[in-house]
Length: 129
Picture: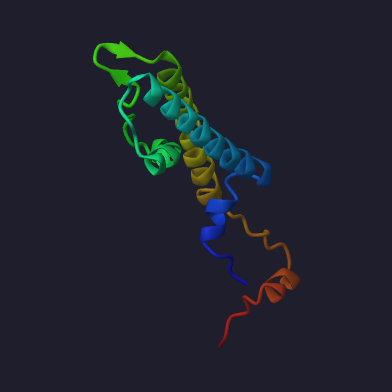
């Protein structure tokens, strides 16, 4: 039977890799939410919680990094550092995903060689006359 083309996207990483990506994305979102809440008490601008939780997915989708950790002329090192580390990890994940997907899609398929008449009959390549 035929295999669904969407299975190629899932096969790029194994089960544990997909689980690690999912857990790390959620963990970074929660840590960013804590950073934004702490910075709001210090005087940084308040940011929507949903936007903060969705930011790791946006970074995985190659969106820009927001300026949530800038206040007047001050910058928060911890928030910017976490965003940059996650952006670098997202870049590596995206590149490895693309490379593995290309390798799966471009993998050549080889047929078994025909050495005898039995091989022709087995592959049902008998010409009709």
